[in-house]
Length: 438
Image (cartoon, rainbow, N blue to C red):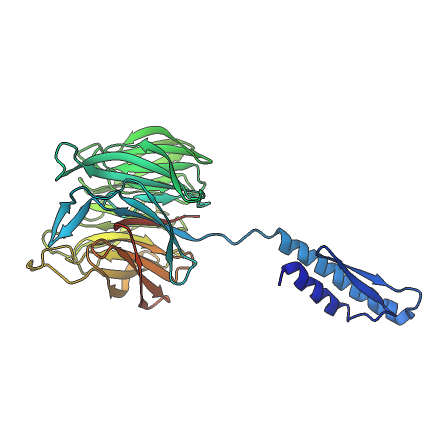
């Protein structure tokens, strides 16, 4: 039943189902009007009816609010899927004449989540699994590509610098621009105002700056943050849009950037947080950040994540905890900031004869309590896992697996992880996933 018709029936009930002696209810083009019969209506009935008319006027106001209410917001995740490489018994191998990489749009409101659109665009598994960003209004996705097939030797990869701008509102979504960042364009973030994007360039050790106006994305400069000797990884923007953090995987530091409009400066404040820090995220409150390390893969050693207190002046690392497995590849802080979901390779990308091989990665949930971290739950996931994303309510968690080329869907109730058994298949290995940060 349409809202106007339902409200008309409600109004009829509110005025007590008037008899012809008392008056009538007329509904014209969705609007309802009360017409009392003043000539035949007794005084007491008139007073009662006037009270009911006031109720009716209140319902008219209610209907106006219903009519003006905005439509429900979409809730999508955007996945970048690499078709260029596969893992063959622990060795990353370039595919001969591979199909194009893809970017998929996942409907998080559906149960289970499902792919609703797909577009071809270059992506790469090299770098943090946060190489895609979505504007707060979910109108655009920006996707980086840190590597491409070497045109001189198609059995190898070489650094890339492309940033694809995808119009998510188009039907179907389409690439509307291809821009250039620095070499090894990796992690990317968009501020919550939807006006600025930053890209960490893994090879150059720089951060590329882009302004966003509507659906137009424009290069706005480059900031050196340590240079090639420092490397890069991920860049995350604080909710107030005035600060950003960038990981430097080659010299094991996390640096602080200052933002004023489209001007971005390296503050020279560096922090030490584990070995080979790459993936990082900032909580929606802006109070803290978490960064993951991935040095332990080749040696089979357990890696860690570190908590950065952003309320301290200057910001600093305040706690570090192991994730009980090598390579903290991906992580995401829950929408309410209570936990961090950490994706651990756990040797699942190694050769089966390796002493460090495990038949599956780990999803580890780490609670944030003040300035401390504690492990609270874990679950087995697929092989060579990458990115992780929460639904807006924090109850659904998606984890991408490169070898299976899918996302596993988990339910999180605040204390327990439950594998739902649902798998969301991708056209390519899912290397990164992101939702809009609002």
